Length: 326
Image 1 (cartoon, rainbow, N blue to C red):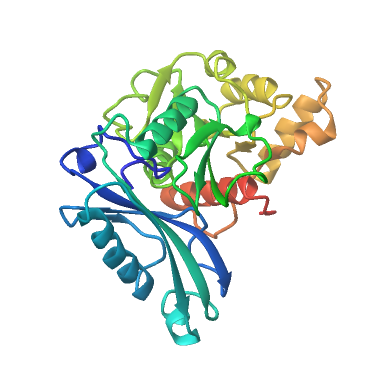
Image 2: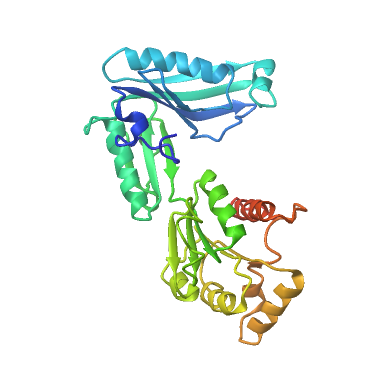
């Protein structure tokens, strides 16, 4: 997608030359379920461009593209709810266990129009995301009522409205990496594929450079504990300590152990992790606080190379974020 969260951005180069597009959103699945999550999106441009997908491909996406072409070339505004029934063989082709029905909402959008209802709703969602606020786009399915966007915390009861699809979008996870070594370099590359916002922190200007970290969103040089203290500690923040240096790690751990960050990981062996816990226990940190530190860091994939360690770290972060016990 032009935007990792599937939002229409008129300034995106992929959409700038499109007079109209069809936005396809997977809004429902019954029976065998879907190989992609509800809310998965595809954009079909009038030029023929296809971005994203509502499934992993095959017959469903082909039918969606055909219907989208008809909608986008028809002129005027339009919306259509497309229901696609699949038998067991068709479902198997796209990764489902059995047959069922997929519901896909098709909406004609003019990206360059400031008054296009979808563009207005998506711009509002992006503004909320930029402010660090999760948003919900409320899109009616059975009527011509325009979509609207509200902060997720302010979404009220929609029972009195026509049937709607609630599309929740939240700011990307912020991956705070303390230590600008080889593992950190790979972490920023892989994290970009997962749409994470990466911040590299190190006290050494020679290591924390744009040349070494072209995929990092931010590079900050200075005392790590002071820089970490400036980052809003929310459950949408993961702190990864890969400096392998007590003078960096302990001050940062003191900062984050009693904060609501969603993940804390420390590079090192079990013996080293135990030594860090012992030191912090002597400073008054409780067992449940110290239990938040994932050390040895990452899911045990058996690999030792920096790239393999980085993969294991991100796998553990994703597991923790999704409520799975690594």
